[in-house]
Image 1 (tube, rainbow, N blue to C red):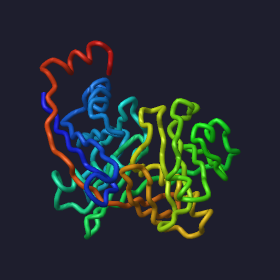
Image 2 (cartoon, helix red, strand yellow):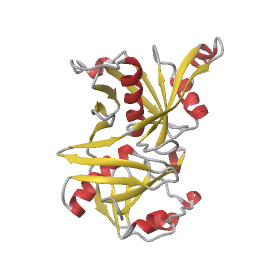
Image 3 (cartoon, rainbow, N blue to C red):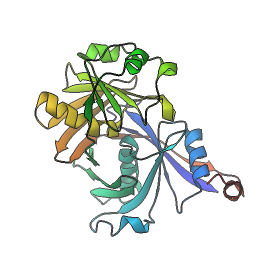
Image 4 (tube, rainbow, N blue to C red):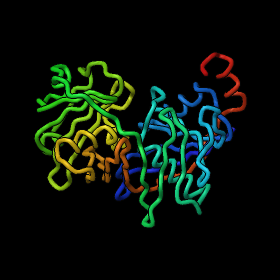
Length: 284
């Protein structure tokens, strides 16, 4: 059995920047155990799997664009929301499958997500805003980051606010000391040349440091809108690869925009009978 594999860098300004995602279009869903093993073998922070068959829960798809069912897996687990792999999946669909379309919609565990392609080949992802509540700084998180934040927020991710970009760049986390959190920990601060910067750590789901995290910006946008005023921001994630994003808070939605660069196209070979064997051993 052959499965197509595309590796696409999202939020990338140049080769070898941004966040690489694997995009694997399927004719039908494989067992979850196979999907997880494929994601583990790809060894990227996220693998996006998509099919054109929509589940009944999706309801009627948007009428003016192609629509797909999309799921995301880290090397360790399926996740409920991922920005960069959605951007990469949109690039693959709009470049390979529907080159004449200006946008694509995906049914996901977070509902319908929409991506538009601009005239200068930037992709704009429409995400639900992720709201946070201010909380006391968790001493265990501060100790794991080996730094002292000035504020903390809790939501889908734990967000720690620092005073300067230099502090974010200098973080050297102790991943073995991270307390258990539902998803990840985002460190953020005002930027020197952009409105805010960040880094994202999620060792609990197999991603020690994520290069660029689109979904985290759906939580960062409301935080920085309140702290800085305004609704439109330039942002940069300060991982080793680095990535650039445009972020806009639009009511209860957040628009996250960036460019994609394709790195490779390939074919994964699954041995005959492998999928049936995985289904039979209960790993689905």
